[in-house]
Length: 559
Image 1: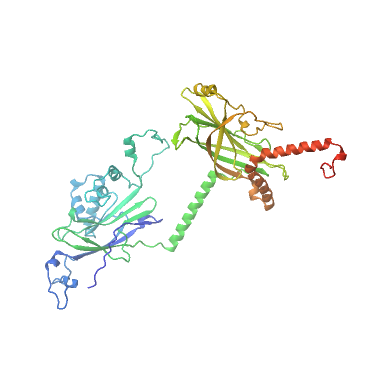
Image 2 (image 1 turned 45 degrees about the vertical axis):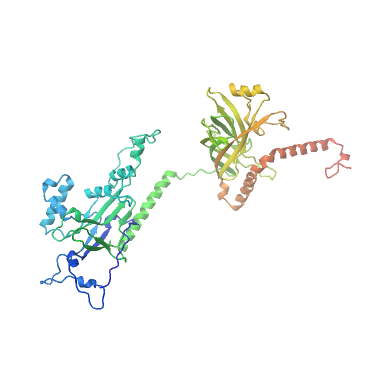
């Protein structure tokens, strides 16, 4: 007799199915291999063989030619949440006094109908569905580790007590909130009670009564053959996995009569017919189409486009942090200055903001204040002058860092400015700041005790003010002190009709964008270029004032 190859992998397997779980069908085959009477029977060893062939343990047929009762073999096809009663349940529900709830009474009526129609078809194989009490007990008693003496933790007990298998629950009507969404000061008990998972899950157990012949219906002989769990997402968990091409699983009973059983589990769900698959595909296609229409209705069909030749700039920014300042309790006042030419913003747009007051924390040698303050704005650039000499300017972000003391007195900690990135995408900018200062000890004492300090009347004085019309901006004698830095995180988005028009217009707009992109580098030398232009203009005026005989035809002075 060939030796049986047993399957030792009893771990769970996970499947995903889009079909309704009610179509699931499993075939379970259970067979007894050995019995205690085989162990008492000792056949003589054959000559030349040291081992006894397992075939010699085959029981002898009875006089009637039928197989003995102890050599049992059973095969049952079970559907999802199909109830098969055990001998214990049949004996229990025959007594009406044992029925304690409506489900017990329903089981009693079903058992009476089965007995009236000739009895139940199954003998040893039965099931516990999601509604049975065994499901709760099994979930509560299952171990989480391999320790021999496991002490369940608080979370394990909470997870065992929570009822998570109800898929047919319905939410409360209406949209009235019964509790606060955010609990700002959760207690320890609140955290412990809410640290559980509430995933809709249904469970089913396929069981076997492996009691000796004539002793069926005892709880101690019940063994789990297979555990099935299905959640609302169509994920099916099977433990152990379907037998397939693997060998059968084995169960060894304990007690006086030790017995060996083998069983197999096969998926015998009927395959969908081509007509059903085609109909299902049509249903899914119609469902997805309706969902797409619903999403389109939420978005709308009117997509706002920019004017021809215009570029729209969207900035979602964040004041991340400030570090390196002298005093604590910092806040930042910031605003965006748009160039006076070709730039505009909506009337409702707010281009300035003030962060919350934030205490600093030590990070290395510096004190850092984390604001995480979000802001957003929108601006439009209309390109009118396409000449090569046109130098488009880009918006500038100004910031002012201030500190607040216990008596609500503020002092200036620093000023800074940075040109907004001209390329779309995510950018992290660090702005170095400085503050005006006075010489002498009296000024520092005044700043420390009463909070007074020098301030800029116009914050745009950090760079060249847009209102400045002169030729020279002198800061001679203006004393400053380098302070800390402010970190900004900017997410820039640009929209232009030229991005989707003809290649000629796209190239034309690209030349504008190239110049705009280079402005972040040009801004640092913008003042130098302006100085050269003013010098060139003065030289031109000087040449015009000289006599014509001193000027050569090329425009230079004659030697």
